[in-house]
Length: 118
Image 1 (spheres, rainbow, N blue to C red):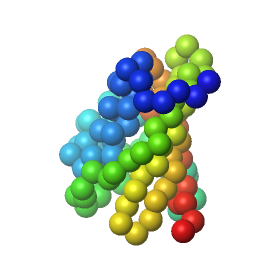
Image 2: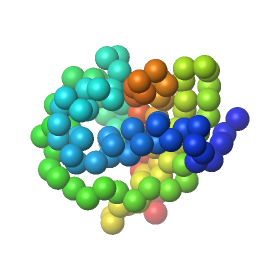
Image 3: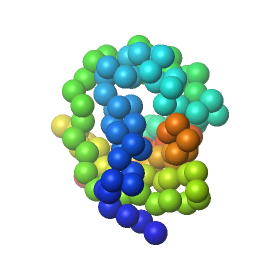
């Protein structure tokens, strides 16, 4: 069942927001603590990223302001896994995101971003 932003999911939301911040993205040690070793991402471009590719790309990314987010939803799909949906609002486009978090950590197992057509 989908739930809105509640205290039950505060650790996962905080970890997701940390991965959106330049200070965490630019620090491979911090990024590595949040990503599972078998992490995979499908980016907004459609490209598939592995754990190693993601850590390296985020570390070299230019600093940027923390994006505005909305529409947070959480779905506990098993005792250890939570599916998260939210929207990122940027100046030139919005995108919808889905993340699969392992609650033991928490560790991000999978992420996908999709541009919302204007």
